[in-house]
Amino acid sequence: MLHPPNKAVASETIVRAQARNVSESSASSSRKMWRFGGACFVIILLAAFGQPLLGLANYAAHSALHSHILLVPFVSGYLLYLRRDQLPKKRVADLPLCILLLACGLGVFLFTHWLAFAERTPTDNYYFVLLTISFLCCLAAGGFFFFGRGWMRAAAFPLAYLIFMVPMPDAMADALETVSKYASAEVANVLFHLSGTPILRAGRVFQLPNITIEVAQECSGIRSSWVLFMTSILAANLFLKTSWRRFVLVAFVIPLAILRNGFRIAVIGLLCVNLGPQMIHSVIHRRGGPVFFVLSLIPFLLLLWWLRKGEIRVRPAESRSAS
Image 1: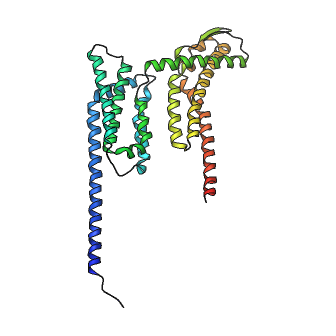
Image 2: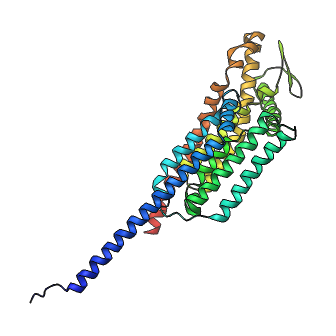
Image 3: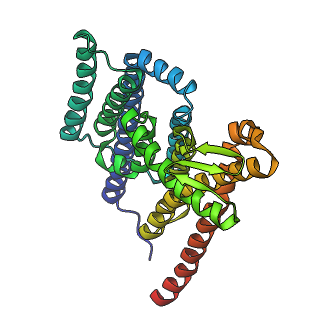
């Protein structure tokens, strides 16, 4: 026997549906409002730091060591785009972290300008180091305010990668160059002995049969080593999931960079011995850095392939054991 539908139940269902639609519409409007507010904050921040950022871009464009800075924002933006579906939709402002980061950013900004006012103007390198740190702190503060801790946690790697926008401080660059040139000289010494070339060595100076070469600061290969380090961090995050495999890939860059530099020194030295001392002025010495960088990518990519293959092999085994 059929009964007519209960009008009270139908009315209650309609009311619930309308309330749900209102709630969803309100949440959507709220998300749009926060998104618009975040976009306005970024625009204001870029305007406030416009002159320092343009100066940083010009500094990076004319620097052999810091030219990678121009690409970093685009890499971070692409990483955010790849993770767009993983970012939380719910946004709750995290005021404590926002205030802390904003205070740090403004503090560094004021300190930099105080140095200039006190006629203690830092060098271009340290000036851009301080102001870029200030900019990134303010940017992170806006992220915690407009998007919240959950969103910032999900976007942690793309945002953290922006740290490579900060120029390497001169003191750090000098220290790394010194360590690299001494380590590269040791590798070159071993390679010279393995080749059977008679040499006399005094520290970083090698006396070869027809030429004397010195492993100078320019031979440290710090630029290509730093780019390789950045590449290893990016590749580890994109292609590997387990922490220890990521660590192995990044740590492998250190001996690889030293071996590459030592190999380059040995190759140039052997060319001078076998083809003539004029090879010290050849293109392979002055412009050969990219060639040796590409060569160093071969063992790097092989290790990445091996680590990823091992990771893929482990996952099906874990799936079978779970089932």
